[in-house]
Image (cartoon, rainbow, N blue to C red):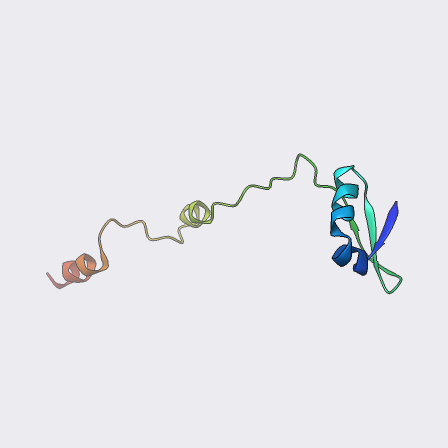
Length: 78
């Protein structure tokens, strides 16, 4: 396992990306102490954006009424 420093991440990011693309797992250190293991993303990891509106509707956090606010206010006055 190859060790990289915080400085490597900043100044040699292209080389770090190449190592990750080649499938290598990297040990990231800062001032000689381990910070994290960086591994390539697997095919199982979904990189798609989350559809927050659909998730909010599913839990009832979105008002799905077809009436406008004004119509709702006037409806209460009748």
